[in-house]
Image 1 (spheres, helix red, strand yellow):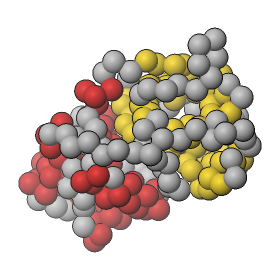
Image 2 (cartoon, rainbow, N blue to C red):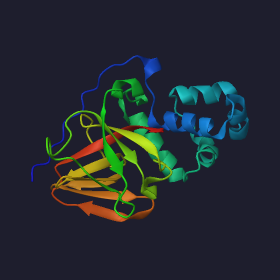
Image 3 (cartoon, rainbow, N blue to C red):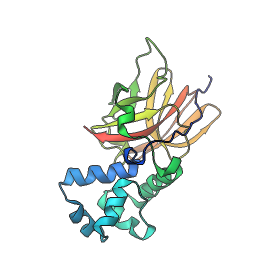
Image 4 (cartoon, helix red, strand yellow):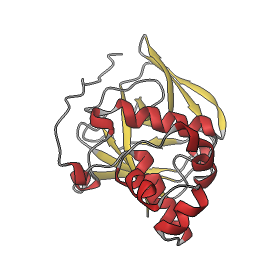
Length: 212
């Protein structure tokens, strides 16, 4: 089956309206814990000004990664993946949430075992524009916690290490892309065994997530 993936075309966007997924996770964690910027900075052992730059999109220095991973309640390897993702995207950033404001929500990844979503195939087998899904599985925690909304952009080229939804036969599987070749995608999930999706139609990259 033909693998339908579009090459990413970088578009320059105003800096204040852009956030990497790492920055968004830092912002979400501060909000969920009800902390001030100063309290977060003290816990992390950095200046408040430094912490503020992380929220704005600057990449933390390697020496603070252990403290930041603990702050975000995730393994250091997961944090490193997020940092690689942020530095690997155009300008180290990705489009703002406002860019996805009109994106259609396709459904809920509620299959707790396979993290699978049955897509509405009455119109299109695979979504063509930007869209969102609700994550209702622990398979992708802590990067994508239960109850968050994840936005996907079919225009971004998927690479190993990206969190993605792989489409095949009217279904979508969520996971971290490990390999994509010969029309097959291998996905890793934090709470389950790796899964291989055969004859994929498309692999779409998750670019933003937000608790709802």
